[in-house]
Amino acid sequence: MYTPAREITARLTSLQGKMAATGTEAAILVQNTDLYYFTGSCQAGHLVVPARGEPVYLVRKSLERARLESPLDSIRQQHAFADVAAVLKEVAPGAKTVGLELDILPYNNYRRYAGLLPDCSLTDVSALIREVRMIKSNYEVRLLKEAAKMAIAMFDRIPGLLEAGKTEATLAGELESVLRSLGHQGAIRMRGFNQELFYGHLMSGENLLYPSFLDSPTGGTGLSPAYPQSAGNKKINRDEPVQVDYVSAYGGYLVDKARIYCIGRLPSLLEKAHQAALAVQADLVQATRPGVLCSELYHRAMTMVKELGYAGNFMGIGGDRTGFIAHGIGLELDELPVMAPKSNIPLQEGMVFALEPKMFFPGYGLVGVENTFLVTAAGVEKLTDYPEDIFYQG
Image (cartoon, rainbow, N blue to C red; front, side, top):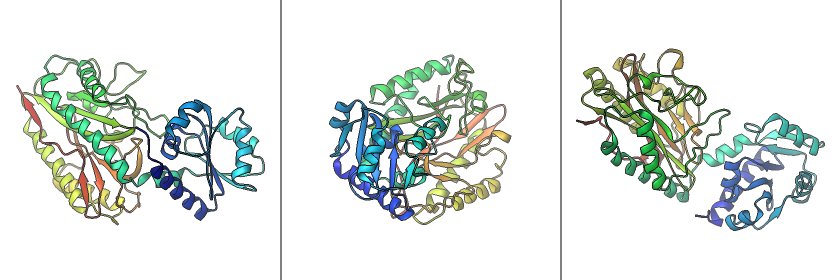
């Protein structure tokens, strides 16, 4: 599954336009996801992008794979670190302002580039990259829709695997096997420093309230403090919520979604709260369209939650509450846009985000949903179209 040349050309053209507008004469990209997005390959090396003209992909390993996977014309072997400076001088002669991915680049690496390019001003090009990646093409949307089909196929398998007495980790392993058999890549990429995720979160009962380091409304105990999130050794009980919040991945593209299951019956308190979460989602879907600010949608949701009487239950408890209600998604789980109180990004056609209104209750767990949406000219399209009521069995 190789990225078409027209896709790579359009992405580079967009980035170069933003670079020229900000006075960035060249950029040097090294992060795996950015390399893949702009070259079609994530073989280790450097993509040197001038504000005008053809980029050069310098590859340390593996050159053979890079040439097979990428449609770029200029793909060369990188023999030494100094090759980066030589290529920069070739494609952007006299460049003084050079952009790096400073949101993710380790400081020691930055020092190496500073030593290699002593006459250049090294600036942060990460915001420009994230802006380009924020708008999905028709090609990307097709891959996202395939990832959504994978999610739906997994949901269909849950009732046959959910059993009282089974541990969270056992059920998680079974569902992860299902996703892998459907073509899941087995990795969830995140851009944020120290943010990591393995497939997603599967917890039950009060474990749904267990916080973790991840910038997410849910956490989970995990199997040890070494990886303190998602499924643990707790056994699934009757009459408690079981949340399956997994990320499906197809061709590198991610789709996030969550549903609530229960063996037996949940208290009416949780059933009513679940319907409230669905009402919040429906209201935001109706209000979402190109031009609306993400912050406006966040405040709209918070106002509605307060009116419904769930202000103290929404998106977490106390200091562990998450400060957003939706996050962008694509090649990484934490892309733009983010629906948060100070996120004044206007929605645009082609943006994709995961909206996750969830209600938390001490002593019980949580209810709510998560779906991935595509912003269209007319509003939004739900990519993860699947029943949303609580799934009861037994």
